[in-house]
Image 1 (cartoon, rainbow, N blue to C red):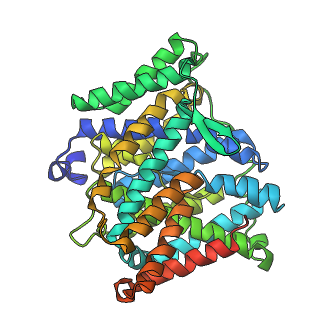
Image 2 (image 1 turned 180 degrees about the vertical axis):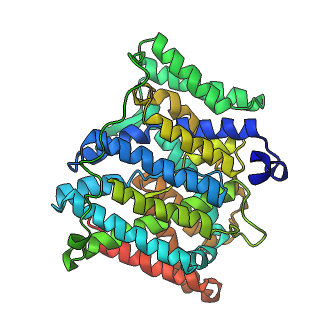
Length: 433
């Protein structure tokens, strides 16, 4: 039954491979169950209920992605958007988290309508292959930098030298390096589940060397979600003063979901001969509905997660990968004590390896054409050096039509890309820096 519904034979995969891929995706992104509530706690959203909202949103979005869209992509609340809400909208601008969630809900409804009327797919299909390559490579370097930072191989530096090498004498850093070597070696040997094996092995070593404490218990009842359930304030978000916030949330979500979806699809060879993702409305509808559900539950914008690349690199090709990941998110509500002790030095190496594997599309860039190279360069460096995917993608949407126009090649710019360019300019103008 699973074989026929998910067309495993046609895709050249099997149930075991899909289960392994789904587990790999989950383990590499399970940190979001803890990290997202920690960030939103700064906005006044209580940790326990927020953790439940995070896991339920991920379950809903990822299950929809697997069963309806049948794609190996996981959905969860985005990093970046959560920090924007917590530290900029609430802490700096002084709005309540209830009003911020109202803006998230409005954005989700707008995306759903745009998807239903196929405007999002029209815009996505207008993105040139060059920018899709830039998205894939930029996501790869972004994941690599996260992995380097999580393992402590690269740390914050000083004024004038923002980053520096970590202390290779620290046990977590050494375990991170060992994890990277182990996963890489297993992949060279073509061992199935190499990434998952590496994460589990480093976690066990972390227990042995005292980097992480063995969980005192494995199972616990989920916290009560009622303090944040349906507490969003939509009416308060419909004010002129809140326009800049809504616009920023809208553009960040629009760009992040579209760019991440296309970047992952490009790397997974899911695009057709025209460079478009077939039935792209289905995964887009999944992430927009997940954003609506997330806002109702009490968390921020949800969308296709970068770490889905780990499952794809582990052999995930069908929606069954996402179904497995979704069920693990649901189970995580009861196994949070164990998830809390998985150290960053265990999953950090996996992000580094996946980031490395996502660099290969750069070979297809036309390096003899600077009007193609410069936008890719803008995407990649701005993603990596601003630590923000949305900034990099919007930089690409602005620079591509700009350099085509000043080079006298304006006809090469698709109509939909002008819309992206205009939205991106508005984003940079109204972004509450």
